[in-house]
Length: 444
Image 1 (cartoon, rainbow, N blue to C red):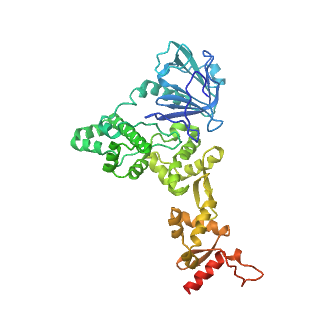
Image 2: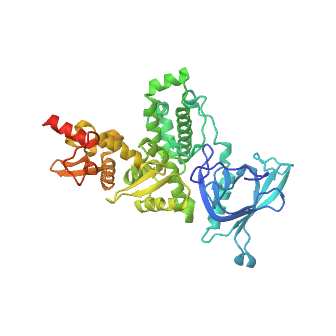
């Protein structure tokens, strides 16, 4: 997809790029062309989204969620040209030019040690783009050279995470990778308790504090990858026994944060679009654990908790969900007749839910006393509020009948389809009606 010159970027199911370990998104531009007249094998990159990270420039096609994608490592850039202000530039599309190091065969060098240099032009055709801000961040990230320090070895936790690897913000399946703190920072906490000086230095020096946080992010990523790999080694078994069950560790890691949350500062005009894609990747794992459907309020709490201090408003979340209709993502927003809004997988089947509810409602005890939302919640493995919505939907489909009493709602299997309107006293020797009569007679 990226031709012979640039490396392709791995994308999630929502079309967002998979980031490298410790790589952070910094800024985005829409409707961007990348041009290079010096390389005949340079790919045709037109009208895409350009993402600036601490390690790379990522160009992703905006036409589909799995379109063309290309990456230019910042390490391969040898020079960034200053923007020239002229009368001609007022009427032309804004441009950024930088110099790339390439190998003799025309491939971009990841180390910046290519045999020759070529000039690449970034043409911004989108409206409302703040090119000066993007260029400033471009300069800062290129000079910062975060790719040289992003893969340092974590000596404080090397025994805990030995043999594990990390894959950045997203897994290959498109699941957003989390960053945990609780339960996995025991070694760091012991170090802080025994050496008060390091704790004071961290608070006195902001750079030292951010450096320590980066190490914790990398440690959490490696621990998360180790848990997902399902290692069966003796060392892994010993660690699982010491720290608790594997499920508990996953809960800790899932409960704290997203590495690179989309913000209005970094995404600009693309904020809601990129937020929508990131939300689609984030909800996949919670939905799998909740049976394929979750209340929108629960998603809002989980997502804001994962974003840390970069909180979003309910309106932003709702707008991000509405945008899913324009993207090819595996999740969708659904609104029940009662007004309750939920997020569910597109593969979620109501028929399967109705079949399980019908099985529950035709049990002898249920035929006699009915079922409640709590009974359905236990059977379906979901919250009672969601179970009640499924019961009401099943009632609207004609599978159940509802009885309202001081004790609340009770739902019964609908027997009316089995009653012959021409002879209401006729009872067939098979079916749910016959079973209900037997149960009622036995209990009477």
